[in-house]
Length: 155
Image 1 (cartoon, one colour):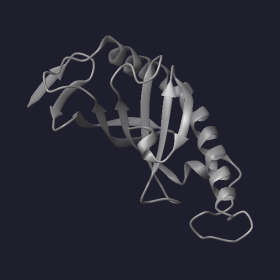
Image 2: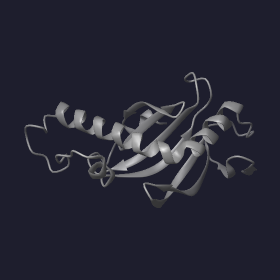
Image 3: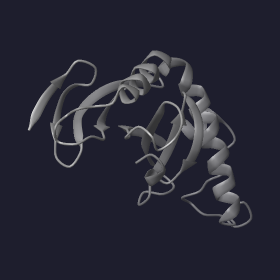
Image 4: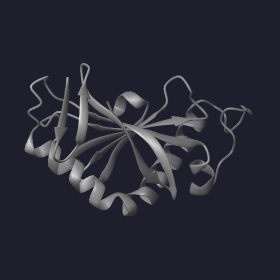
């Protein structure tokens, strides 16, 4: 089933509403999946529209804070795994947001059901060089990073 939503555009339903689209991330246009949680009747909540619209309006300003949060997460993960002491080629020493930017690729935007958290809730999924299996996920609440972890954080 397909719909053409005024905010999300043309979406197709297969357990979740989704479409492939492109977005500029860190100065480069990238192909991503936009996934909107919702029933097959395609009735989305006002909160979902508000969260997505606000994300798009603030996208440019958000990107640097995303990178800093990812860098902080990466450094902690690297330390927790002991790779700050022992060398591991998948977890190289990284100091800057420019370096971490080279290690990630935005993969998707998830607009969850309203009510999971208070506020405008959005998930971002990334592929990353250090954990190909689990990837990287970010949960945003009111356009601020609330959690960074594996991709399931964002889904």
